[in-house]
Length: 140
Image (cartoon, rainbow, N blue to C red; front, side, top):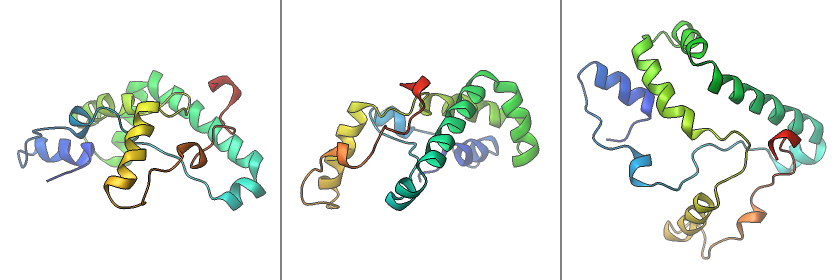
């Protein structure tokens, strides 16, 4: 049965499940984290979009360089023990992009998947589905 890594780690710690395989070990090139905005929001509030993304990447940088503080906060907020959060942190930290750019291999997998899952009749031009123009200049 598929679970997110936090749930799987909690259940494994309770002895209820064993993690046999992780999605990322099987499918190497995939896009896991995406931030969405509607076209209307982008058109009407471009500065807010840019500011949100700048704050997001500042938060990511902090997250990646302050492991123990992140775990301490998560323990209070999520009410989970440190060993579980430590393990989840180690799993999650590598999944989060530092600069917002998508991996071209992951985009290719996603492009093919639209056809394979019968979502679209043909593979889309991926550049039409996302933009990098709002990424912070430091991330470029």
